[in-house]
Image (tube, rainbow, N blue to C red; front, side, top):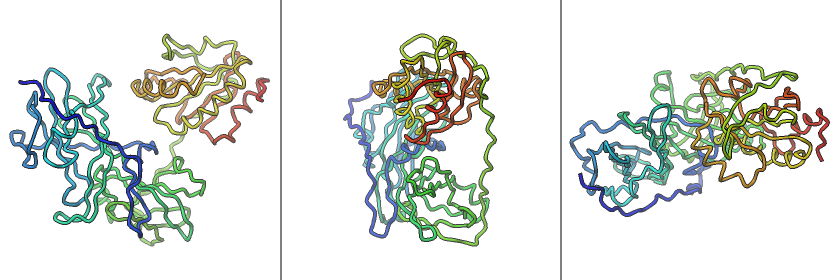
Length: 427
């Protein structure tokens, strides 16, 4: 096979602003808004087109592949321009390529060079991606378009699978009125199809789609990250009252009203969390990968008080707490107090990218637990951590003083109060 032809290198631009709405719309689409909420995602499988020997009719120009291409289609919206074609070139030797017809002109040679921009080994499997792009979403009917705008979508691929994986990056943000009060709100769909209107009248209807999550700032403090997602496909409870949501296909209009309709989705019962290590317990020793090289052991810090902070690159509250931990570190490091920021439940790739980008802001020691979310995780197995950020204060003898869960903002002085128990002064 010939080498791949020279392509026009044209990086897909990632926007970071909401799409303008009509005057009566109360929500606006942020093409990459879901990435800021860090709620996780539900992978969607895009199967390859069945007729492998036939080129999709919409394609008019292709690169020189090094293997027989695999084709897939992603649909965003329900309008005439909702479908985007994708071609995968996966030779036995050499790097895989992904060609996305982002401008929907049928030419797979003018939307970039086909690079996945990422390849990792996970659990004995090779993964390409994650590749984040903007694609066109079209709304209306099959023959008439009412509205269109870009939506962010992420793609990744495990070698050997007969499908491509993707998930949504966009979110709809705005305000809703509930019982006469105005609340900040965010909508997220999880089918990666750009459609938010998926009402369900039965359990069978629920099985046809994935949750459409609504986050509401019920406390009025502007914080959505701590809200529990509500699935608006069926009526739901807020407090003692039952409501239903009405939303348009594209998620730019949302209304919440009281209803007497039955609730199809019962809220999940809180999971009982294991008790954290009690005060006076000997903190378990562990070995982790020390940033800068070598191995970090908790026992190496005996004779010092330790602030042991469990965090992850995907955890927003963890990162919001770090400036505060740095401030504490600066105030107490001369008094024999060390800070260990141990990255847990995370990928090494994400950790190795995050630390260099942020290290200039922090003077404490970073480390990484290579066990990820496995059963040998330092956080879960040894320290009974079930949510992060969780911060342990450990005395000079290696015994637990306090365990602190979450971060309440700059007014949160639980770390300082714990250190005072050890006679450490906070100025």
